[in-house]
Image (cartoon, rainbow, N blue to C red; front, side, top):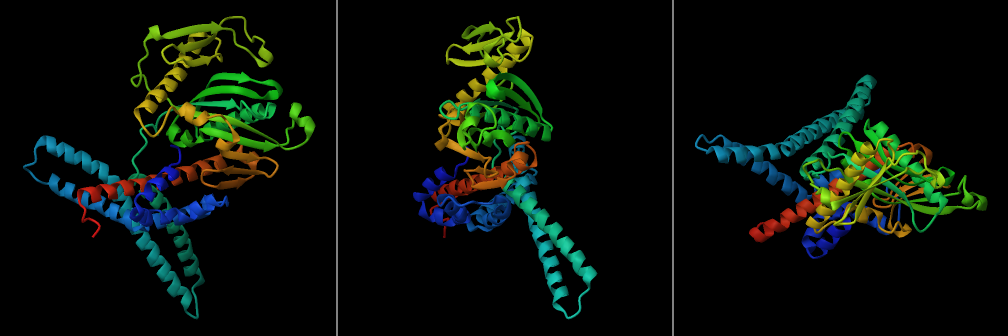
Length: 438
């Protein structure tokens, strides 16, 4: 699941004592969302992070990790340890070390900040003040506060298990809505495509277009791209889903009505597997070639360079028509096909998620939207965390504003993942040691 709060909350209902211990941290956020109130992560997320780290259950979990690290370190000093056991304990120490280091650094920074604040308070309490000293102390206070915020985020990230695909490249697809919006959907789909192209440039990623099917009035029916670079999937995995637009169209048939129209489009994000992740029997493939099509259906070249590949056992289809070389288009289409098949296989192996394509596309109905872009009110709202930002044109450039929103989603996801981890760890301890709560 993209954001797992609902599933986590339902599990807490059956374990009331756990719910009391670990859900109070995000209680205000839950109230805001249930009452459809705006929630501003930029102002509130650090306080939530601090409250979460101060939570009794989380503190207990961190202490257990530190205690385990000390035991493992002490055990490694035993000269009689066998080679196989030494390797296992060394690996365990490597796994625990980032948490211990992050906690120690955050603890030291908190102590330093406390000392500076105490000194600042005593300096400003007297009848006479050293203005230069006060200014220096406030600068140091601001610097330590920012450093502590970053260390708190880092600590939570080290506590949460990494997603195995976070460092993967992705196949990203955009598709205009099927049921609502008409040409407004197609124009919006092109703008979203341009936004992600801008974000790729902002993050210094490669943006390789695999398929691009334009529509009338400068719109876009569907496009697929391969995005490669550092931690691409981690940054884009929460972008998959239905995006809704509300605006007065500037071009197309809808523009004649001069009223606010609503449309939807879908974003699909699939981690791209390496060659060893999935093997495909050539006998299971049907490969068709055809001429590339442009707007209105006309052919844009005179050779059958476009390639469509069908995986016969599953009916999965992938195509590419961007290159003039048939071999190049075939290679790109195979990349898309492998990504879709890989995600389908992974979906069958886990109970928590089905194929990412089916999950993220849905019916492209407005009720399934993850984000709304209201051009008339100059507002972008992410409905999963209640995040709202202004200056929609700047947001659609795919730069700092989009990065800030995705960062808030990642931080929120890490917080929820830590809550789930603490809950499962606590329940496990209760099962193995019924007296552990006392």
